[in-house]
Length: 159
Image (cartoon, rainbow, N blue to C red):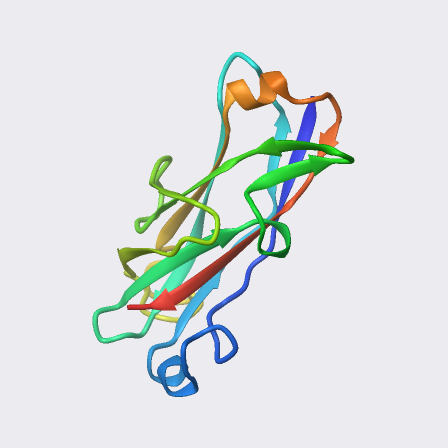
């Protein structure tokens, strides 16, 4: 079975934050995301793909929260025609990690602090967080064969 997950992003701005003033005074930004290639899945073991990204916050505490959602703000699933395959998303506030805090669809999870010194991590640390995508072996075992794809939207908000 060959599966793929495409990663899209939505950075917090005036349209997503509570107010224009808050968006301007507490900027957050996520950069460095790329498509997540899951390859062929196994029903014998979980498939886990991690990538290092830049999560920036200019709030007084450098704090931020993360919200994940699937296609059109929906659940975290890959699709193949009428078939679906659930996946999990984890976030770690440090770069280079292979596990993190579980993110449920459309539920903000906070308490993260950015080590990034620039919005795109072009000086200082080059990455500041880890995104981990997991397809559990049990989900792969029960999925119909074929190519799966989906979208992942990540929204950062200041704290």
